[in-house]
Every structure is written in C-alpha cells, then in structure tokens.
Length: 264
Length: 271
Image 1 (tube, rainbow over the protein chains, first blue to last red):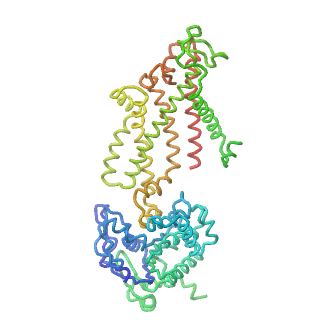
Image 2 (image 1 turned 180 degrees about the horizontal axis):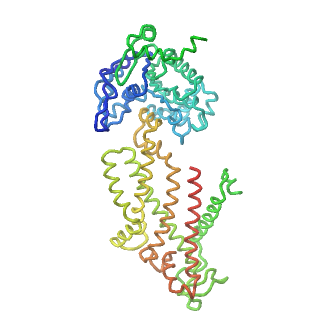
Image 3 (image 1 turned 120 degrees about the vertical axis):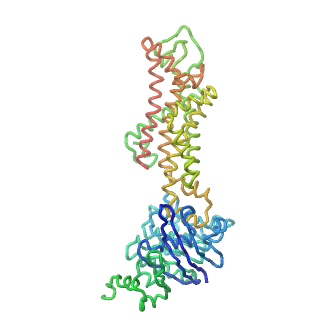
C-alpha cells in the first residue's frame, strides 16, 4: 500500500466558531493505482489533498488522524522529515495553470527546481537533458524551445503540461492532481487525462485525481471516493460506483452527468 | 526615438524626457568625481557674487567661489547620500517586509506595530532626532534617513509577499522541498521587482529632497563641503542682489527629482 489515510479530520480555527472541513475520512491508494476523489465545491476534497501534500498552513488548522505514505507518517511529521519524504516521492499539479507557474522564471528553471533540491550532485547539463526529456514526455512540441520560454508565452494547456513535467521530474511515486482540467477547455481536458493515463501506465506512478467532473473520473480512475460536506459518502471501484451506487448522493451526482455521449 | 529603439521598446515621451534629464545629471555627477572647473573651496574676493559669465557659468557666491563647481560637487553629495539612503531603506525594508509577509503570525504583528510607530513620524523629523542624538555629518544623515525610509519599503514588500505566498507556484515549490530562504528570495522576491523598482525611485526622490532639506537646515553636509541644500540656504541673503546663486542649485534639485519621477512613472506604467 502506497498511501493510507485514516480517520482524517481537519478543522479551521480562524473564525470564532471552529469549522470542520474534513470529517473522519479514510481511504487508501496502491502503487500504480489511479484514485479519483469527487465531490462538489466545499466537500473537502482539496483539503484532503493539501493534507497529504503537507501544504496545510500550520496555525489556525487542527488536524487529527494519520496519513501514512510508504509507512512514514506525514500528517504530524516535522517540516524537515516532511521535506525528505515529499517532493521526491510526491508531485502536485493545481487547478489554475495561470498561477501555478512563476511568471518571472523560465520554464526550464522551474522544471529543474526539484532536481536542484533532490539531486544536488547532478550536473547542469544532465539537469537540462532531464528537463527537456520531461517536457517531451508530456508531449510538448519543441521542448528545447519551451525550455527557454516564460510562462506567459504558453497557452493554458501547455502550462498544465509543463506543470505535469515539473511534478514528474523526480519520478514521484504519487502524483496529486487537484482539479487539473477544470480551467481548460474540453478538448484539452481530454488530452490531459489521456496524458495522465499514459504516464501512470508507463511510469507506474499512482495518481490521486481530484475532480468534480464525474465523466472524467470515470474515464480515468480505477477506484473512486465520493465526498460531500467533509464526509466520505461512498468508495469503491469505478465500475461499482457507476453501476451500483449505494448512496443517494452518488446517484444524484451520476444523474447530473450530461448524457450527450450516450445520445451520439 | 533612438534611445527607446536601442533598449528595444517604445517609450512614451515623458519617459524619454526623464531618461535624457537623468542621463545628463548622471553624466555631470560622474564627471564631478574627476573634474570640476574650479576648486570648490577656492575663494576669490575679486569675483564675489559675480554674475554668470563664460569664466563662471553660474556665477560666484559670496566668497567668490565658482557656483557651477559647487553645484556639481553638491549634486554628487546629494546623489551619493540619497543612493546610500535608498540602499539601506530598501535592504532593511525588503528583509523585514519579506519576513513578516511570508511568515505572518505574532512576530508579524509585533514588527508591523513597530513599523507603524516609526511610520507615524515624518521621515525628516525622525532623521532630525537621529542627527541630534548622534551628531551631524553625511554618514549620520545617511544612517538617519536610511532607517527612516525602512517602514515604507517594508510595508510595500510585505503586501506583495502576502499576495504571492499563497500562489500555487509557491505551494509547489514548498512541496518540492525548496527551503524557505530560497522560496523567499529566489521564487517570490523577483515577482515584487516591478512594484519595488518604482517605489525605490520614488524613495530616491524623497531622499534627495530630505537630504537637501537637512543640509538647508545645516545638519547635513557640513561646510566648506558643498551641498545643494546648504547653498540654497546661504543664497537666501543674496536673493535679490545675486538671484543666480539661488536659482542654479534649486534648478538642479528640481531636475534631479523630475528626471527620476518621469522614469518612475514609466516603470510603473510598464509594471
């Protein structure tokens, strides 16, 4: 088992009344598996991902439960321990490709950044070679040119590919994709999903795919976790969830998928 | 415009005027390090308060010293003091602002309240207090003005850091295990440069005016060394008999500030 989340609770204390955003959530993820977390806005799916990535702010947040990644506890680990585990083994891509790349740095510099941290003895030339290989791995045309460009010179879809490349450069065992397709148009969404699928197959990399779009999740994921208002509603294999949903909420979600593809 | 073309961009007219004025002023200042037409302390009783002529381009002061030479030297002093002031203010401001903005928490509260207190005083008043404690002289002026300039830079930088620390690229850098000093100075700081540069230039202008003001009050650069401010103050007595004595130092202060203001406008518009 690669990742095991057990009884995860997250509470915000930045207002007078504590706000519980994730409540007793448990699930696990095997190596090379693609797990989808679906739910509407505010269901706590992104917060769960942030907790796994160790990106929750320290103050004002109360966390309970455990998150094991390859046997090491992440949720209560110190920053130094966390840094050793993460980055190398966990990569992340975000929803908004416009803010997920640093506007003042060249693409190559950003893709190489985690190599500089986790492979400090790698030579410059080797780093560049790896970065360009990563850029061509995510099917960017002319990776050498993209390497020297700034983010504003690329389209949203290309930026998301760059993000995937920089998340993948250290060959992580887990890629967290937090609504990676939401800001893209539909044809690009499909390309990104296919790309993630291919990378999962070729690199044996597990993917935690967070989305509110059930049709994408169905296409991509082996197993699905359904969340609502911070609670885990239902989990199971993609087939089970879609063919025999047990909970009313899951049925409603499935019914909400536009049926155009079935008509055509 | 050829200058604009040379930099590879088209600039509006006011920026080009700013570039030309600043360029000429910088040239004169650089020149003043190596050459002034006359020794700035050499007195000549025969040409006391002499009107501008080919010998003395801007005339002579009440001791018969060449005003042009003294203006050059005064510009140099003003420029160096303003530059050092801005360097101290920016460095201090960036460090405090980056730290408080990035980390937040109680230390942010404490430091920002201190900054608020310092900010509540006009910087020239603060510098006056500083000088009256530590004495006059150009290095005390630099230290006093520099410290007085820290709060405004700290606030600007803090605001920028609060804006950028929640950006996704900062989060992914954190996840990648990038150390906090590197995130602060390599990942975030360059993003603040557009805002920082224009406020540095405005800060430079304020420093020029503050230095001139302090020398005018007699607590800045000490005689017989020349300063635009102290020349203005000396010239008051001769405002009607020798108006050129007041006009030229004043004009130079205006040009120095105007040039940088126009440039700062252009940078702000580009940012």
